[in-house]
Image 1 (cartoon, helix red, strand yellow):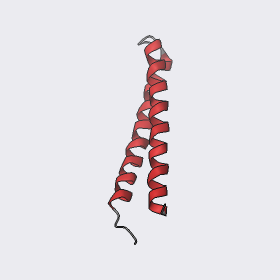
Image 2 (cartoon, rainbow, N blue to C red):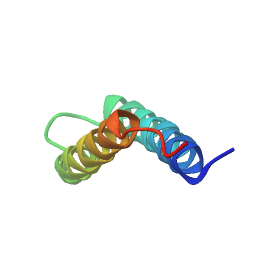
Image 3 (tube, rainbow, N blue to C red):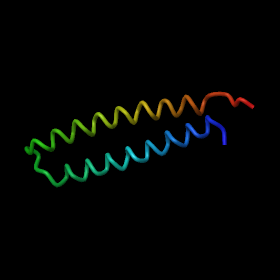
Length: 70
């Protein structure tokens, strides 16, 4: 497996881990009342995580678009 493929796999695994973390955040928010201050903190945490996921997804797309170095 080449370096590019390794990078694609690592980025994909990171995105899966992030998605699982986002799921945990959202499940926790569902347990809280709308006026609970922790819900706001969790919403911000989820928003930041989504931003990071977007950056990783763009990087992954750029890696996938690179020509093969065969």
